[in-house]
Length: 75
Image 1 (tube, helix red, strand yellow):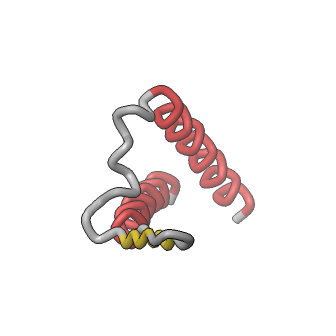
Image 2: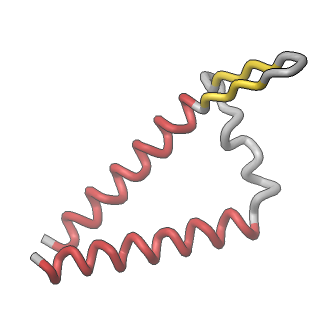
């Protein structure tokens, strides 16, 4: 079990580094993240409320796919 957990952590770390590098170098082209249809944004004079509902669903689906693929690769 320890070896499998270590492999998943390594793959997750590599994916985080790749994702961070993409965001760092292509942040101008990724401005749509957090501004998708379905993301709730309410701005008043002294109040701001932001709930990225659609973005969270998209990130959840992508992470689920990545973790399922990693799970199949290491089992």
